[in-house]
Image (cartoon, rainbow, N blue to C red; front, side):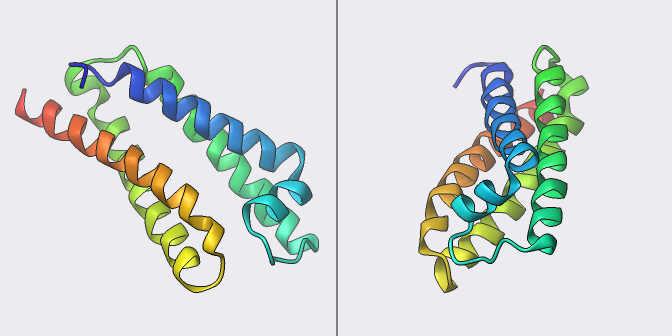
Length: 126
């Protein structure tokens, strides 16, 4: 792995901005694609747009932090690690219980979690 988390932060920015914009701009389609079997009513649209807004914020955070190094980037790495670990738990639960297609985002967030954990530890060791 590279010495600095720049590439991981760029990947995170692209993934989160893409998913977030999809949820904000096309919430009905996004909710239907991301969560098959969930009805699209007003509550789902509101939840989709709210989640999309949060994802856009995480994408912006990742993009802005991409050039930070050392201790300056550690809080961002910890926040993104926490988010990705919780996403693994949520999508993993969905995949195991009601929406088998949720395995794809589970694996994606698991990979991002591993990357962020690696760099959190690397920054702590420095």
